[in-house]
Length: 87
Image 1 (cartoon, rainbow, N blue to C red):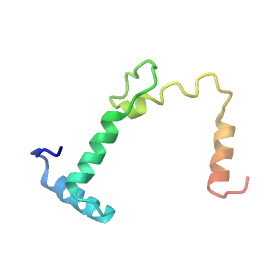
Image 2 (cartoon, one colour; image 1 turned 45 degrees about the vertical axis):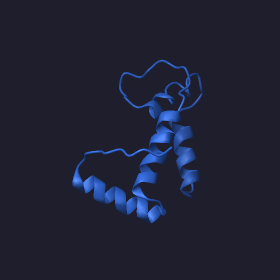
Image 3 (tube, one colour; image 1 turned 60 degrees about the vertical axis):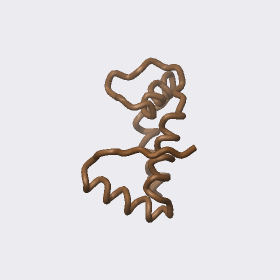
């Protein structure tokens, strides 16, 4: 069941959000609803909370590369391949 919600925020943010929602082919109300639905339904993996972040999306990434044998050469090779640069 739909229910009305009133929000207060910066006018420039509202206008930018309206333009973005319109470009996506949805109303601002539907855009906000989808955003809140995705954000609140996220279930992070049980990992220690990072002290540096305050967002559930990035907290879920903390520690996923722990004990992986990676180094800067691997990263540079990946970036070169990703961007089509010859090594």
